[in-house]
Length: 397
Image (cartoon, rainbow, N blue to C red; front, side):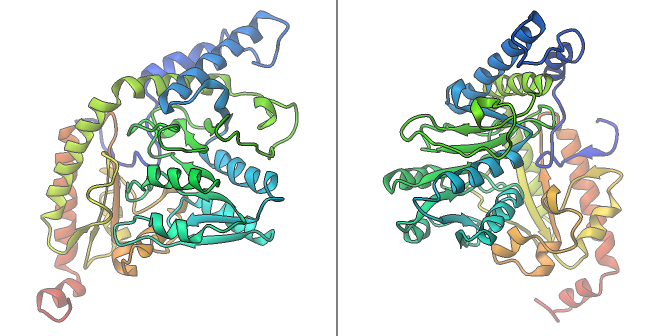
């Protein structure tokens, strides 16, 4: 087994694959040119590296390289997509449809637009974390300019009915933006097959470096236009100005190439490990899995353990296992997960959830260690838990 702590928080970020790092290194040292420098070989080499990476990224999602806009990450990509559409199509309408369990990058951007006078419909999810396609259809009005629904949830791994949503959006002539940060590289994603018009994703979720992401922008059927959110220099075809992160982009491309080659076998292995982890932890009394058991990512599980204090539980084994109780973007907050509450969990169960994301470098030995360590910690905590005593005595349900 690898040295402690073992890492089960791959939904927050992944390790950079050594093959990705090897690809990046020359662009820090010997080939350090600016991709916008067109008058010498250093710039030409950098530009070639970016162009090749653009092809690699596009190939993973079924796009063409001209549809890839490089950003600093998925949060910036989501901001560019949502705000860019809102500004460009404001003469057509001012209505956006989204979901209450979206990532904060989408939720906070939509709230920002609400303050600007845009109208946002916040759709609920069912107990499995799934949004209703019928509810989306019913929410569309002549003023609707954008549907923003994520591909897969970062806390539960639940995969939304993206293909049906894309088809609906196309039929109703509404732009469909999808935050696919957790899905790309983990499950097959095809923007054409799913009728996705705009899609955000990030390198550090698929074994690439932090600080680089992409926005897919459809070129035809329909051609999507965006108002830039960062001005200065006209980089990325005027949609995102700023000196390109050449090492990061080269690494992003390599990471996508590896995912394209290894995703199928990797997903099968991780699904088997995830199922083994779930079997072990769900053997505990008063435990439950959160989210759909059918429509979900192969490497993610979210389990609530009742009659104890979730954050205290995590701290008891924090030096042995790295995991979280929710999104990394909200881990500093003591509030219960808004995603789990939207699925009908009470505050206690939402606070007592463990989000576990397995990854490329996770081993069976580590999963066995996690099962044993978490189980022992739960049993020890319940020995001194008044809530557990009341439950066992039949005083609570």
